[in-house]
Structures are given as C-alpha cells and as structure tokens.
Amino acid sequence: MTLTERPEPTPAGNDVLVQVHASGFTPDELSWPSSWTDRLDRDRTPSVPGHELAGVVTALGYGTAGLSVGQRVFGLTDWTRDGTLAEYTAVEARNLAPLPGDVDFSVGASLPISGLTAWQGLFEHGRLQAGQSVLVHGSAGGVGSMVTQLASEAGAYVIGTGRAGSRRTALDFGAQEFVDLESDALEDVGGVDLVFDVFGGDIGRRSAGLVKEGGILVSIAGPVEARPVGGLAIDFVVESDRRQLAEIVQRVRSGRLRTNIGTVVPLDDAVAALNPTAHVRGKTVIRVRP
Image (cartoon, rainbow, N blue to C red; front, side):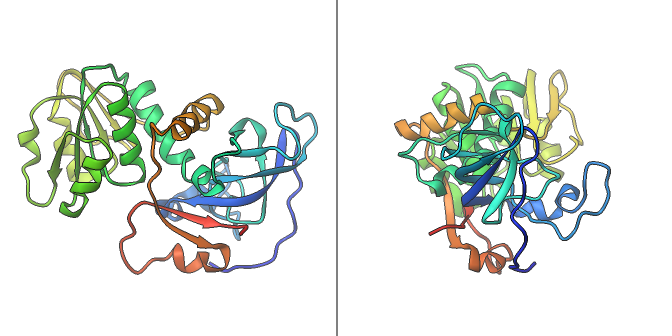
C-alpha cells in the first residue's frame, strides 16, 4: 500500500463527486475479494480501499437527483469501486445520506458499516422485539457496540461477549451481562432469542445451540456452519440505505447512540494505521482533510 497521486475521478450518471473529509476503515476489507476485483472477478488493481466516508458534494453526474453541490453527506460506497481513502471519490448518490452540520466528519465516517450492519442484523434479519434476549459477540467492537446500544434501546436484554479487557466497555455501551470467551463457559448463557455473531468458526458453531425455539442466529462472519434446532440462521452482507443512515445519525445527535472510534489519523499516516502492530480497539478513521 502506498500514498500516491491519481487523477480526480469523474462522476458517472447518478453519481456524485465527494470531497472526502474523513474515511472509516474496516481491517477485514483488505481480505475481501471485492477490494481487488470488479463484479466479474477481474483484477482492478491498483485500487483505492475504504468504503465509509463523510464529506462534501462537489459535482453531480448526469441525471443525479436528491443531493446538491455543497451538501454535507456520509454513507457506504459500492464494494467493487475505488473507495474512500482519497481526497475525492465518485459515489452513487443513492448510497449517501445528508450529514447534519452538528455532526463531525470523523463521527459521520465511523457510522455507515457499523451502524447499518447493526440495524439490518437486528431489525431486518433478526426481527428483534422488545423484551427479547440478545447475545452480542464482540460487544465492545465497532459493530458489536452498535448492536448492543440499538438492542438495548429497543427494549432487549443484552448479553455481551469478548475478551476480559472488554467487559467494562461492553457494560458501558449497555450490556446487562458479559461473557469472557477466554475463561467463562459460553454454554452457561442458556437460551436466547437472538445471537448476533461477528466471529464465526467455533464460536459461531457453539452459538447455534444457544438459540431458543423460534429464535434466530444472525451472522456477518460468512456462511453459517451450524444452524439452531427449531430456529433460523441468516448470514448477510450489509447494504447502504439512506433512510437507515438518517435514523442512525439522528440517534447520535440526540445522544441515544455513541460512536466507538478508537484511532483517528491523517491520510499521510494511513498506511501505518491500516497495518497496525497491535490490536486496535474501536473504529479506525482516516482524517483526509484537517
């Protein structure tokens, strides 16, 4: 990975050109095939990583409607196009939502993947209802902390999991209980209505046995390897949604939802930040403009 000069992109039909102020980054994305190939699985390197952004619209493509030049926006870009770790990026307008003026660009850039993944996993795929119980794996992480907060706000009883050092963070974000996956017995949790799995592997397989009759295991860790007896198992890939982005950012503005930003670094230091030598807690945000 290198920091280099490239021509400013040209927005196609229904695109906007965005001057990027901040970009969120998910470490796993460097292992996603879509980071390096197009929709037909053809090599498209050298490619620009990053899929979350907050910035200002500077130009409209032909036929673009719903956004205007000078408007503050944030959102989630297409998986197979050049991404957001750049001063400018071309984005389909439908993938962006207005960013209120009182929300910092770094905060806006931290929300799309974590917030939309949590929202869609809980309410679209998990069909969460008030009074239900939810087991949230990685509850102190970028996605898990959003899941914990949204589930708590919806009236669910939340049990978080993670490493021992994450206990305080998970409880601060709203978990009522915490399971240390290194020393506690996961099976002691008993039956829950919904499991939100971000790990997969052995944790995902064991979690299937914790789902109650009629419950749901939701996973973002790839194909589900074990299915609950008498329940459903769903794995999904997050999609951009303007209405859901608006719901999420309004919760941030009102204080009902807190971001989980771990590191903010300038674009000049992005290569080192995206190849950390130690475990990074929370979301990594690259601040493209000062």
